[in-house]
Image (cartoon, rainbow, N blue to C red):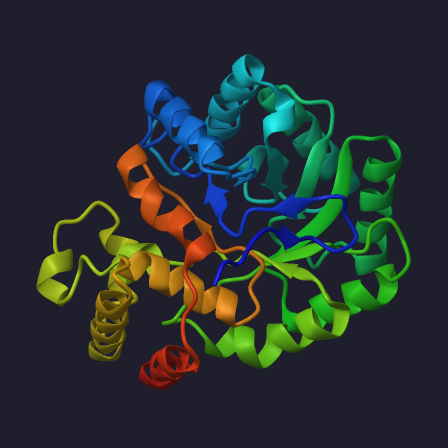
Length: 315
C-alpha cells in the first residue's frame, strides 16, 4: 500500500513520508553532492528537509552553519518554493540556550544562511530549564508574529516539560506542530512509554531522528566485526548488541520477502507505528532510492508483529 503524503496538523504542509536529514550537507557531502542529493530528492517527490544551525560543528575546523549554507546555496539556484525547511537552534555554542536573545540571534543566523524570509518549521533543538516554559512560548509567539518562523516544534525535551509545553501553549500560535524524538527498532522504550501518549493526545506530527540507528538498520552490519573502523563507529557502537543484530537479521528476512531493502523496511516499521515521516540522511545520491521507496512499501500485520517481537528487548 502507498503511504501517500503525510499531513502536519496545524500547518498548511503536506509532506512526503521521508524527511531528508541535512546533517551530511557540507560535511560528508560537498556542494556538488549536496546539490545532486537534493535534486534527486525533489525529483522523486520529496519536499521536506531537516537541518540545524549546529550541523556540522562536530567536524574539526567547522563552526556550525555549514549544512544551512549548503542548503541555502541550493535554494538560491532552485527556488525556495521547492522545499519545506525545518531547522533548529539550541546546540550551537554561540547561540545556545532558550533565552530570548539567544533564540532570536539563532533564528536570524539561520535565516541569513538559508537565504529565506521565514523558517517553515523551527525546532527548539534542546530545552533550557533555566527558561520557563511560559517564557519559551512567548518567545516563539513573537518570532511567529514577526514572520521569522511559521511554526514551532520541539526536540529533546523531557516528557514532563513536553506535557507542560502542550498544556500551556494550547490554542496559541506557539502550540508545537511536531516533535523530533529518538525512535527506531532498537530504541523504543523511552518514546513508546513516555512520548507517544503525548503525541496521540495532542495529535502532533512525529519526525524521529536516528531512524536507522546510525546505519545499523541498513542491514550492512551484521556483527560487531563489521563495525570496527567505520566512520560513525562511536554512534554505531552504542547500538551494537546481540539483541540488535537479531533485529537486523529479522529485518533482512522481511526485506527479502518484500524484495525491498532493510533500510526501507526499518522506515516502514516506524510509519506503521504512527510516525509522520522518519528522518534519514544520505551522503550519496545512490543511497536515496531505498529511503524514498518507503512511500510505496506496506508491511503486513504479520511482518509488523515479527519486527515488534524481535525488537521487544528495546521496548
